[in-house]
Structures are given as structure tokens and as C-alpha cells.
Image (tube, rainbow over all chains, first blue to last red):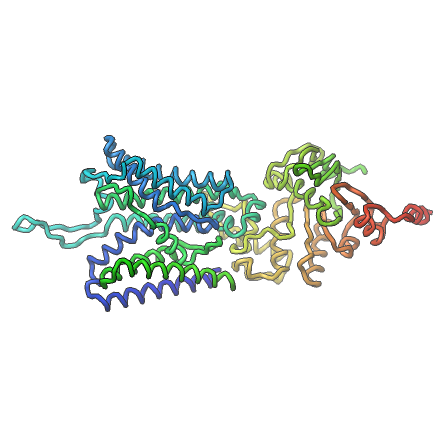
Length: 325
Length: 258
């Protein structure tokens, strides 16, 4: 496990380096502090979703609902703000809504014995429908400056007032979403490597029957994974809506595919039992940099879709080849 | 027998809809005894053992451990009463290493609730070395180990935790000759320690080599329960295939008694 896992991560890391090198040569603007920060911001959303999906994929499941749950959570947070809640508690309500969607997935999968693919496909439609119904498909704006703090703020940002009255940014700082991603990634790594629930996630995905016979509470473990995935989708939704300072019920369509691709590129196996957070982070940056770099190089959005599609197929193919051996 | 049985299963029944997998079966097991459980596939022996292991809930009947009635809802309940099972599939999580499998479901933890990897590794090394001095690769995923090594992990897991009753389902079916001999030695060692063993097997050689008693099941019922010295391999085969002893069996036994 260790040898092959590390090999896979090393090759993913190499791919990442090559991408950076390639894009840097194609466009000088790619390799700048500002663009680096843009990539960090863009990747933080995919990264948070990817961490949730890694937990689910390790159990041998899949979560197709995270893009829709992301939108629903952002909408719920915004509506809570509109209802008069302060920003922080309002965002917590949104994250809880995400966790509730995840828990619903978990119940459908463990109690009704519906395959994860179908259960979360259902939730994908349900959450999107609820988000659109609640808002009448219209974005919720004018949420106040406080709502934009999480997505647009940065640590150690240095701004100087110029004589002409306009601010000048001396150092853009480290964006809060990037810090959030780092913290969540470390927490999830700790969970997977040092806590019993992490061990049980791997065991469930590796051999569910064996785990059950060994006394692992398999259903509870799966509930945990899907609830966490929902909560992280909620967190990602809040980061994204905060960045826009607007809640968009139609935001996040197809994000689940980017997140799944991130996890699989990072070495998570769709047949379960394998996956690491560090791998998924590399995968998320590969996706983020691919999108950003193609943009910077002036590649049309249509071609971008084609490229990402091929990358997803390629990553899953690599997964298949790995399992056949 | 004056001794208290380790475990008794009394009038156990298991139905799946209209299908009767186990019908009015009663068996017991004494300390330091190896009881062979034989029968066709689907004769009900695996079903019976799953009930004893807590992996299946009987439709009716009673289980007693050390004379006290118990009720098993999950495998954990059975394990808490000292009943451990080695499944034919070994029930190992392939991506995890030996210590992780050994302690799966009952991980050792530090004061802060973290996994105590160091202590689990040490304990695993100790118990595995006792079973097989050549055991290395403790940190490799068990999928990369040989059949014999995997069997050793499964056995280690079953005997590490204060075991009284061991259920072994076809323990040698997937093993080579030297590994089979190793498992046979182990079974003798465990019997000498006073552990009671149910041996589910198709291998007549193993059964006659290791067992004190044989119980043969057919279509969910017990068709024969004998001390191993009362029967021959042909008698047991007849029980398995026809559900009855050969016609000359009682005559032969009378002769032997005289």
C-alpha cells in the first residue's frame, strides 16, 4: 500500500509541476503572485469538496450531490442573514443544512440500502431543486460586507492609502479560504491516520463484510462519511457565496465531478479502501491549475470542458489499471 | 460428563421465509475439545456457526455460555463472551496491515483517544511470532501476504483476546501441505490450552486427525453425532451423503465392544 500509494502521489505531484512549468512558459501572467492567489481561491472550493469525497470514496462509496448541496448551503446561509442572523451563525446554519443533506444520503444508503450512486444522484436533484425553489431561482444579493469576509479576506494583508485616496495593496496576504482548506486538510489527515473512525473508514471500503464481522459499525461509519461530505460541501458553499457576496442557487453545477476527479487523480480508488488527503490536495491543484492555466492561455471554455473531461476519464482509467494489477 | 460445557446450543431453528436452514439442532462443546462439523454445502452447518458467532440471529432456540443463557445480536456480543470465529474468507481488510487487522473493531487507543499504533504493533509482533516465528512484513497490507500468513493473522486475531470457544470454518481449504500442518499443530496447541474448537471442514483427513467428536448435518438437521473412535471415514461419508449410517454399523460396533 505504502509503496504504490507514494508512487502514485509522486507521479501526480510531477504532473502538477509539469503543468505549472508548461503554463508558466505559455503565459507570463500565469506565474505571478496575483494569479497564484486566484488559483488558491479557486482550488479551495474544489479542495474542500474533494476532502469530503475522499472520506466517502475510501468507504467505497460516491457522493454526486456535493455541487448541489454547496448551492443549497450558500442559499440557506444567505437567507439566514436576510432573516436577521449575524453572519457567523448564519453560515453555521448553512453548514448544518449541508450536513443534514449528507446525513440524509447516509440514511438512504445504509437504511434503505440504495446504492450510493443512485442515492446521491437523487440528493443532487433534491438539493438543487430546494435551492431554486427557496430563492425562486433568483440570486440573493445585498448581504452586507460581513458576508464577504470569509471569501475575500486575507491574513497579513497590507494596504496603504495613496494620496489620491485609492488604496494600494502592498501585500495581498494569504486568503482565508486557503487557510481554511489547509486547516480542514490537516484535520482530515489526522482523522484518517490517527483516529479510530479513520481506520474504520478504510476497513469498510477495503472489505465491508470483514469490517462488520470484526465489530466495526459499518453503517455508522458510512453515515459519518456522508455527513462529513455534506458538511464540507456546506462549508465550500459558504466560501464560494461569500466570495461573490451573493447566494447563487445555480452555483456549483458539476463541481462534484471536479472533486471526484481531484480525489481519483490523488490516488483514491473508486473501489474503496484507498485514498489520502494529501493526494486529493495534489489532485485539486491539478484541476485548479488546469482550469486557470487554460483560461490564461486563452483556451475557450468549450475546449476546457473537453480537456477536463479527458483528464477525468484518464484518472479513472489509471485507477482501473492500478486495480487490475 | 461432570464438566460444565463451554457452550450449548439448544433446539436452535433458523428459517428464511419458507426455507428451514436449521431445524431443532442442539449441540454442545467442552473445554479442550475439538468437535468436527460436517455436511454438504447448504446442510446448515455454516448457518449454525454464524448463529453461534452472533452474525445471524436464530428464529428460535437458546444459547448458553458456561450454563448461562445469552442472546447474541452482533458478532461483538459473541466475542464479549469469548466466542471467536475464523471465517473461511478470513474476513481481513486487504488494504490494512497485520496489526490493524488484528485489532480491527477493538483498536488500542492512547489517553487522548488516538490510535496507539506502537502498542498495537508490539502486541501484533509478539502474538504473530508465537504462532509463526518466520512472520515478517508486519507493516505490509495483508493483500500482499501469502495464504498461510493471512491465516496466521486470522488465527492470531481469534486467540489474542481471552478466547474460550473458537469456530474455524474450513481453516485449511486454501492452504498448502506445510501450512496445513502448521494450522493442525496450532489447533492441538489451542486444545491443550483448554479452548473448545468447532471445526467446520470437508477434509476427512483433518477431521480424523484433529477431532474428538464429529457432528454431521444434512438438510438442516443433525443426522449423526459420534465420538471419533466410534466411526470410520466411510461411516461419516455415508452420513454426509445419505444422511444415515451404513446398515452394518451397529453390528460392527457391537463386535468392537465385545
